[in-house]
Amino acid sequence: RACHAGERNAPFRIGTSLWGIVNQRKAAHPGFNYSSALKAKGGTWSYRELADYLNNPRKFAPGTSMAFVGIASYRRMADLLAYLRTLSDDPAPLPN
Image 1 (tube, rainbow, N blue to C red):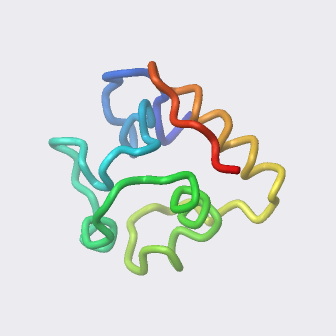
Image 2: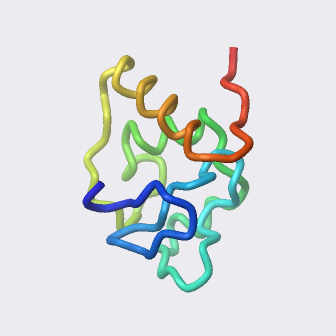
Image 3: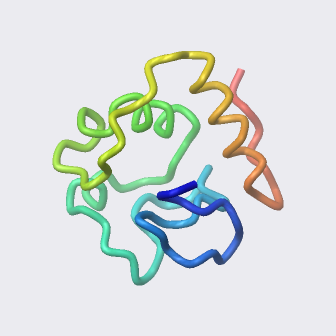
């Protein structure tokens, strides 16, 4: 909560709002200064890519400006992805 808001249209904190992050284009919030490393990834955030990024941000996008060290616990990651799914009016289905 210190770095990212979860509400729709919330102002930037250290990072952007995570509202609707699943299936959203990477590095796409207008007006936010994303690292070139994250901009270069391209595509949209799937659950798999979010898990890879949140497990080890610096490995996923070398040069990222995200200071978070990552989540190693599968249970904590599953809980976080389930939470991120709630931040949407039309949640993407969880993968099998």
